[in-house]
Image (cartoon, rainbow, N blue to C red; front, side):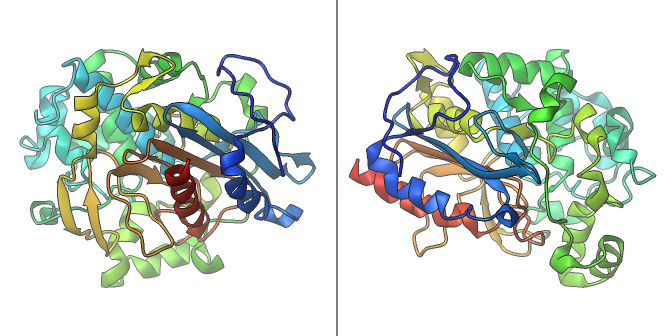
Length: 401
């Protein structure tokens, strides 16, 4: 067990082996360490803030076959990055640069094609744009690496009619839609806006979509494959796309060659915020920690309380026609998933396929972030049960604190 309790500023350089555990959160650290006992368990990191103060920053396991996970290890975190991209939108909306309820075409005129002129920014943030299909969107197994071609294809696409009745999770396309709205509204590349709106205000650079070459040695190696139940990717996608209950998921989350693409270094050259975000748990916990603390961290305002109230409001409930389960979508976030009877209200975040995820518990002033390279249940688009098991314990400890 760890007993080091000194709080530190994010900008302070600390030894790569020095962890941080508030004694009140020792049970959570113990449960986390139990997850990483053997090399085949891979590695991961867990970080938490309570009322704007860091209470946990730990890591364990292996970032590669011959490397231990250390303080600076980052990992590809899949849909966890949707929450960061959404927070960019809220920072801009707070200053009137983006209007949630304005048509997307107000910022991105080409988007009005094929009957999409009335689709709003809020529709995109709540997965009601009807543009969930990534499979076949652009030609070639590496086609989605071409940002300009992909956003042009989305602008030209005809929306799914089911958008008028409910939500359809935009598992991969969400990121391009948000990134292009931000780019058109600000006139700046999305990754530059992330730096200005997230990294610099929080004093942590580790919010990456296009990863500099100098930072890439820090990225943990992913394993095993993300193939559903270990089956051949293309065969699985082809079969699922013909089975009515699973068709939407295959269309939304299984582009050609995706199982190989996730290991291609070229993914770090492109901007694909729906799935290729690279983060530390520390960075994610700090962002959600600011949200959980009412918008202020280290005496600096990150978001206004009224903006956080808008972020936390459930905008649409009902069965999602891609996921096939009931969802309660906020503007860019879902309710944290807990492996317990408890259903946390007043909480928002985003989990990613493979296990990584982060959330803010507004009721208890808590944030929790988990990153890992040991991919869990590949068929589950909103993660697996590791964070879902850590979350309830973290919330219980926060209540006692």
